[in-house]
Length: 174
Ligand code: ZN
Image (cartoon, rainbow, N blue to C red; front, side):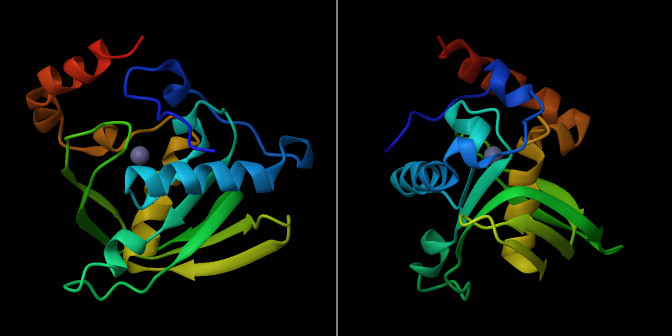
């Protein structure tokens, strides 16, 4: 089911999300996140962005892998109750955007590599190490579960410069 994406200014984007239990129907949650993400053409989507205060997100790199210029391999996964267990000392800047903050793209500094732990859609525990695009998207989506947005992590002067654009997005929410 495709669900309308919650925009910047909505309270749910600033709340601490809660652990997913089997009662939350994780498979259905994953399906809804994937369907909504595909429709929007993005590469990551977290449950708070569809109005659910739950610790889950999906990554789908197809928009990158369908681009001939890109060498990003196709990767599609749901992450339930994720944790970051290690972050590399090395940090890199990379441009980010967010489906909840349309029209804004900014460079964000984050660790280059991470080690993570999460449950898959069948509630099996998984441990993995990510770098590149996967590490980047994972950290952006993970922040959503703690009510953090990528614009919180940019230079305060840049953020000030974006105030009018952000207020415009905020003004469209009901
Ligand atoms: Zn986002």
